[in-house]
Image 1 (cartoon, rainbow, N blue to C red):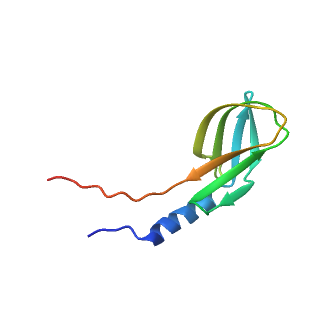
Image 2: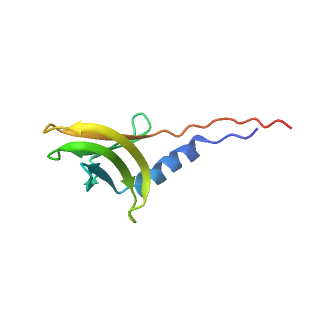
Length: 102
């Protein structure tokens, strides 16, 4: 029997957590570099990006690594006004058993 151990899931989440350094958010066609505002591990790994003063149509948000490579991209269509807004990036790793016939 082959089973992925919980340790592998935990180490994978830790790797991703350490890999993400910031976010890029596109608002009205302008790309803003934003810091990660909060990280939660309560229900799986989640990264949060807060928008405060920016206003306009949010069309895209992406988590990036230290080299600027996009790791997690969300296409969006949200009109942000003067109120604050947070974008959540949930990372859920699930283990599924695959049966191969033959």
